[in-house]
Image 1 (cartoon, rainbow, N blue to C red):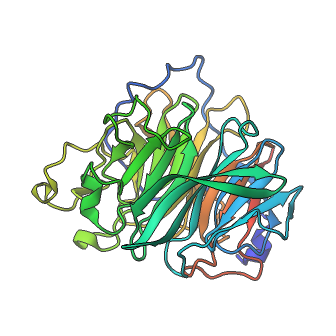
Image 2 (cartoon, rainbow, N blue to C red; image 1 turned 180 degrees about the vertical axis):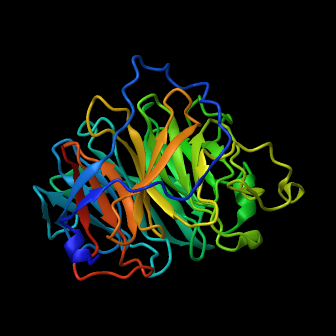
Length: 395
């Protein structure tokens, strides 16, 4: 299907895609109690798709302000503003970042403070040049009248890989704390080293300090043993899930992308495990504890999962997990048992025909907003790439 024609096409939920369910993982002991009654099971999802804006330069993350304004990061260092369906010509901010085509660095994650506009803070994850190479940083900015100013660094000095595995997703959880996904920086052993910030999900307060309730006192580390996490999402019961990119040749392995149920203090296997496949020798990495297996992994295909969101097209259905896939070039839809948050019920695909997909967000209008990533050096861009797509349920 030609991409220009697909932009206005009706896309119907497709047949189940490849993947392998992992062993059920127990829910987090700190998770909120289950709600009652449970909404009904999800039905087929039919979407009408249109392009909101095009001409973006490798967009990475999208977030809404309370008034409906969209902020979008571009890996080349700009934060773009979309207001009333129009891309403003002036960026809200331009950062001096380390970025090159075909690599995974640059301006990546974006998160809006849950109290916005009081305080009017927006958080960014980006890569910069450090004394020993590329480093990752998370900073807080003040948003006023379409501009981001007054940078305040809250996390810095996180080692970055020469090419890849930066992670980069940041998001505020239902507890009001900031979660930061960081890749292993192409040094697998760092993921199994609790003293390193690489290969982890970090949790900090909105000023960067470590909350008292973290699993390792005084440390921002919330979960560890993750190769390259690029997506974070919470269900409506407070369970956190992460998307993780699998190996591309390490230990002779390929594929094995993961969707993980994140629990405080838990070890997720890398580099001893890649999904459900054995990888490195435990004794080479300090004999870490048994890992929590993935909810589902891609087995012998590659998804390259990135941004993710829980979405319910109407209040009578339980939300399902949607994950933007880069190499897979589709949205992955996972139906997870709300009473067993580590148990996968079904896996389906939708929204093909638009190339590489980087992020998906549930908008305030109950539609999905999806970023393409065809100008990142690994895709085949059309003339209007990269784009923000709006996909609304029909019926």
